[in-house]
Length: 306
Image (cartoon, rainbow, N blue to C red; front, side, top):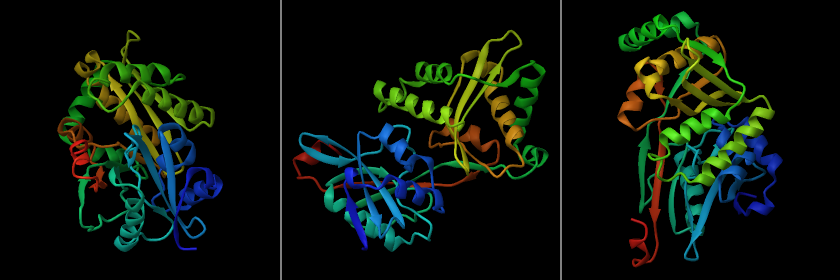
């Protein structure tokens, strides 16, 4: 069979999802339900009988189809139960770029950036924390500022609890940060709500809130869950919560709750200095992933996408 391009309508979704489940680098974003919800269109590249797969998320503008990275999908690329060599990555990308003349997409942490003429690659940060140690051991690795701010939050009587409804957190997140997320549309937030609805029905959604002793919501997080990871996809802290160090308390309590488990806490970034510094205070590992850009458009059309 070899490697082949498959249009969406011909994809065997069961085989695709089975491939993601058994992949060494499987991520929730590559599941078919997630792609269906968040991508405007997607096709796939498949190796043999779904031994490896790569989703191709695409849009069309002025009659030109191009690859793009949908909102709330941090990493794409190739997923396989075997090692993904640079040659395999290059082969998948060559096939993708034979169908699309413009691409701005991410690969995933399981791929070494390929060297392809005309393709630029930038590594993006993603911090992850293995939770298989005791809480005491994990806490001992926090930096001094995190420890100080957690103690301050505890002394303020903050309360950590499981939430029952993801909508207030999603609304809080959108209200606080939508202005900074200029590539996220209203429909992106609506589509992500449908992802949360499905995961909630499957008991794979974690909602955690931090409130003051006066029952004021100060910080909240909605995490997606699969067999390997807790994905910190949406979190928000109010101005009052920042003053009370509620975000430090929130993540410390999450780490406490899920310590001595087989989960990885995936912080979901970041290249933003302040956010990266915050995550680094919990002593995670950086698990970078490639951002790939290719532009083979006609010289006049290149002005549209630089």
